[in-house]
Image (cartoon, rainbow, N blue to C red; front, side, top):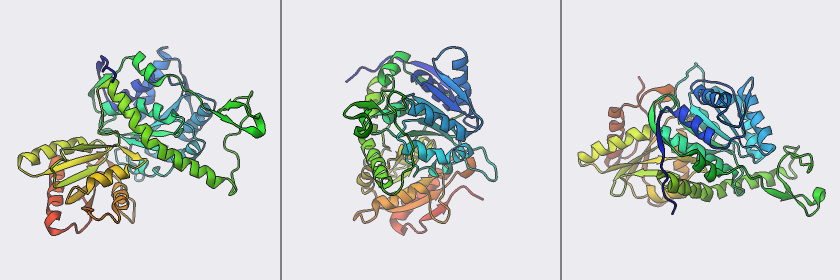
Length: 410
């Protein structure tokens, strides 16, 4: 086991913490377009570039569609590429999200969660990244600025692993994390450099073109390759299967990278996929994503003092979905409350839907209730969280009906 290294503490908001992570990660190209509440990330990065603190190409583009397109070109040419966006900007990128994943390009993007318009709203909910959950990107949801910093660094190592080669999306709740000041521990530059190294482009064989010679999987005039050609039904399905298999292999890589990072930083987030809190003897738990789960721990402590056996589980990695881990742990409880800061209109919240699919047919599956909350940045006060726990406790006796409940709305 490596020794935890000495770190320096800085007062940073979540956006600034991400910018520092990018600064330390040997990124070659940053392409971005500003959008609230993400703008601070690329503003800080542009300052680092302007001041000569990093050897990085910063590309100012006319839209988010172009921002991710530029990252596609840079990554295909072998560069380590980064961008950031939010809500409507992510939606404008939608075509390129699928292209990035399908071309197996290890781009890292931070999305500061913001409610998609309209009516126009600049505050937090998860409907923006939930809309992209099936685009082929790994998705990591963070709880605070420290985790946003840590996860951004980890994302490069996960994506660039030759067993994965998929883009990673790191998310942080708009304003709750992005604009809230926090003490953040930063690793020394040289430690991050050693942890990540420079991007290593894998080599492949293309016998029809280059014979038995291995060539870099990148755009290079010396070894011509085509990225993104027309791909009809004769091969398209096989390429989708490769993406499926890569996402399955990502489970092991995410776990390994999380463990390696914990050894040098002293910080870990559960097993890298889920973070349980006081669940060992719990009768009921609440499961959720993002910054709200920090407040949930406080409520768990308060209810424990009242003698109520409750716990919480934060889902950190949403894609690939940690279904086996959740299946194993959730069957230990009588009832489960699910916190969804998003909604699939005409259905339920996205996390609840995935948990229902995970537990379908499981003999000892708990009763589950979906609580949709916080859309458009609506606060989740402690008293409301406490009421949710009380309702989950009541479900042990009265049953889970109704299973869909909207909380905090007039």
